[in-house]
Length: 249
Image (tube, rainbow, N blue to C red):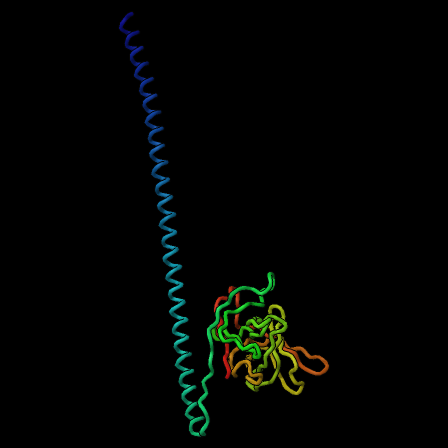
């Protein structure tokens, strides 16, 4: 074999080795790159989730602080009003005004598929009385007797009824549950209820005390003898847990 042939074979061998080495190195490099990219993606997702969780918690804390401030303001206002009222009652030799409430716990729905009837854990329940039910400062229904047990009828239930005032003129009416709204019926025709009027309890039925907020009038309709107002309630009880019951001696 001459020298030229030997040199040619050597060059060919080196080229083959170089190609195989390069391909192997390229594959190794690709594996490393994929590994790094995967770590980056996972780290980025984890970091993003942590950031989102942090900001969600922060927003929730801010919302709760705002709500707490609002409640503190309302408490101060109510304290001032209560003090002024009781001062006037004392001067008139009348007993102090102190509406009583009791915290009760929801146990279960009374019937499957009916989300407006709820059994309550209610100590000292008086089966001869009807109680007003409040959550978040708004009316949510009434409490009645069912086989000597406390049964909450949420205010969407047709049998949930209580007396109300409409607007600044205190127009009288009776609230009835009506699916997703409340209907205030038996409104005298000589009155002028209108859309946007606020509806509050009147206290005339001895179920609620006066002034508990119910909702706002959405529309007013006229029948033969009365007006009827459709009211959108303020309260929205999605998952019932605890309620306050109006206690009257």
